[in-house]
Image (cartoon, rainbow, N blue to C red):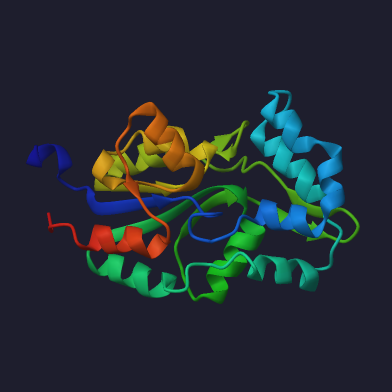
Length: 225
């Protein structure tokens, strides 16, 4: 076994962003702020299988009509994990790297992380706010983890981590997180909300959490390699 893991970095935590590293989803807050977006039925089209998850979010975000200040106010309501910088530093001290894998847009993800002084690797859909055109989200076509369905292929991100690291953990809360969560061992499979309910229905073991800091605490409590 030692020969198989020789040269691998110690540990990688792959984490979802919206609803996992934050208390609120950007999507939910946008729909609350601009309820007229819901009348177009983009999400219902996704749930019916007519368009992809990425396309549904792309259309919804493109219908946002707000200036940067207004949209940043909404981003601030997402409530990023308040102890994130402290937790990331503590995890790094124990050999854990944190990687964000998100089906959302890096426009708001990077602003929240930069505001918190957190420098971690982010795999998310690129985008920019354009006056009169909304938040224009694009497929990450230059990424090794590009997915037509989600924008970011979280399974591919986790598989890459499994290839490079001795220990891999995953934390998530939503539908796109089910498949990647099942790739990691139950003791390092962290779930809340929809994901926790679905894993329970499937009879799959997992570690429940409410705040992302709980994930960090449990990984920090693991015995060293």
